[in-house]
Amino acid sequence: MWRYIHDIVIYMKKKQTRLSSKLLIMLVALELIAFSLNMFFEPHSIAAGGATGIAILLQAGWKIPTFISVLVINIVMLVLAYLHLDRQTTIKLTLGSFLLPFLLYITPVYNLIPSSRLVSIIVGSIIFGIGLAILYTLNMSSGGTTVPPMIIHKNFGIDKYISLFIIDGIVCIGNIVLADMTSFLLAVMSVGISSLAIKVFGTLRQRNLVTQ
Image 1 (cartoon, rainbow, N blue to C red):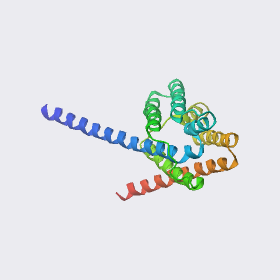
Image 2: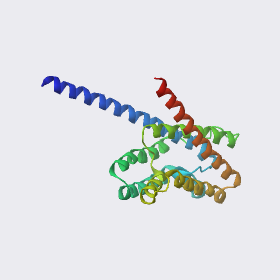
Image 3: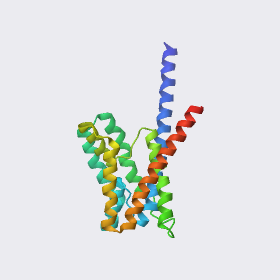
Image 4: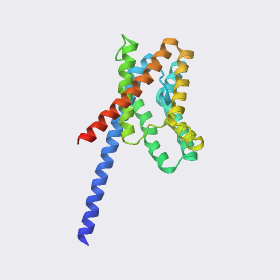
């Protein structure tokens, strides 16, 4: 009996340790995203898709703080997730949906590479992609515009990546309206670099798992 209780206690401690580690890694991933946005994208007003891209457009056009826009968008998306998706998915979305706006708020906005928009966006895109890749490996999300593709896929069977690509494309077009064609091209390039960074990170992680 005591041995059984002891085994349960040990199991719970291990589970708690794994959960704490997962939350810590998730926090690092979200901070990488917040860092890339506040240090590389927002200073140059480049909106490269997603809820954060919409927030940068709103900041550039109407001076609305990005963390407020991201928070509002994420809350709306959480309501949609609650109404149209399963409970487990909604729970996974919730933590990132509130943590990312908080990290955007506490991370200062500073132009680390003022001399070159191109270099700034390349570096920012790589960091952003790594942050997203880490979240994907944890099976977690930062919320936002990842929700509509899930709902569309559930109801119509359309691939989530196609819907997400269309949403990101619309956000990128916003750069033309509020800035110029150069900003649009940089945004499109950013989406490509981030996607490549996610793929490379995933490939390296898979190779590491195989060799272990």
